[in-house]
Amino acid sequence: MTSAIGNGSLFYRTPSKFDGADTSSEKLGVLKLRACNFCKAALLGLPPLRAMEASRTSHINGKAENVHQPGYNSNDRVPANDCPGFSGKSIPGISTNGNSMNIVWHKCSVEKSDREELLQQRGCVIWITGLSGSGKSTLACALSRGLHARGKLTYILDGDNVRHGLNCDLSFGAEDRAENIRRIGEVAKLLADAGVICIASLISPYRKERDACRALLPEGDFIEVFMDVPLRVCEARDPKGLYKLARAGKIKGFTGIDDPYEPPLKSEIVLRQNQGLCDSPNDLADVVISYLDKNGYLKA
Image 1 (tube, rainbow, N blue to C red):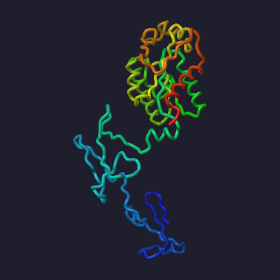
Image 2 (cartoon, rainbow, N blue to C red; image 1 turned 60 degrees about the horizontal axis):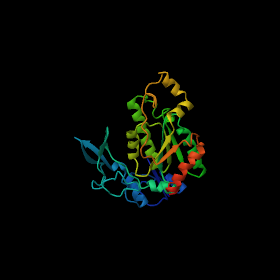
Image 3 (cartoon, helix red, strand yellow; image 1 turned 90 degrees about the vertical axis):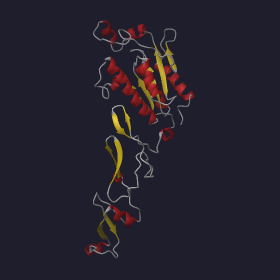
Image 4 (cartoon, rainbow, N blue to C red; image 1 turned 180 degrees about the vertical axis):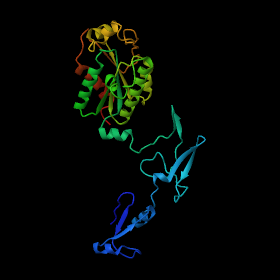
C-alpha cells in the first residue's frame, strides 16, 4: 500500500528487494522510501503527472511565451481551460478586457445546463424596476417566498442591501449610480449562470443602464418587471421618508423629484395598480411566477 504525507511524501510498500531499505522497518512489515515525483509515479505504475507548474506563460514585450519546468517534455502543453484533466489542448489566446490585461477564460466541464439540471430550474434574472415606494422590495420578497415554496432556489439583490457591502464605496452621484447598476448586473449574471433565479430589485432609472444589464445575459434570461405606480402614489406612501427629504431640498438628484425616471418600453411584465387599488404582494408575485412557469423557467 502507499501513503503520501505533505510535500515530502513517504511511500510505504511491503519489504522486498530494494537497495538501501531501512531494515528496522521490516519488523512492521513495511519498507520506507523517500521518493521524488517520478519515483512515486513509477511505484504506482502511473505515468508522471503533468503538474500545473509544468507549463507557465510569461509575457515579454506583450507576447505570451511558454516557460517549461526542467524534466518535463517541452512538447506537452498544459491546457488552461479544460477542467477534467490535461488533454493536451493548446492554451487559448490571452485577452484584454477593460483594465484587465493578459487574462484567459478558464472553462470547466460543469456548465450552466448541468447546474440547472441539478436544481431543476432555469437560471435567470428578474429585474424589478420602478420609483422609490412602488413596492419593488416587497414584491421581491413575496416572489422569493412563492418560489421557495415551490422548491426553487432564488437570491435577491436589493438596491439598498447591496450598498451595505459590495457597493458601500459608491455615492448617489450620476457616475456612481451607473456603476452601482453595472455591478449588480454583473453579480446577477453570475447567479443566473449558477442556475439561480436572481431577483434584482432597484430603481435603475435609466433605460440605457437596464438595457446594458440585459445585454450581459443570453436572450430570454433577463426578465424586466416594471412596477408602474404613479409618482403621487409612491410619494403618498413614502415608506423611507425620502420624498419628504427630497421636497425639502435635503436630498439632491432624487428620482422622480429632481432626477428623471425613464419607464421601460418593452418590459416582459408590467404590474399596474388595479383601478386605484393595490393588489397584494402575493397576487403580484403570482403574476410573475405564472410567467416563469409558462415560459419554462421552473424546470430544467
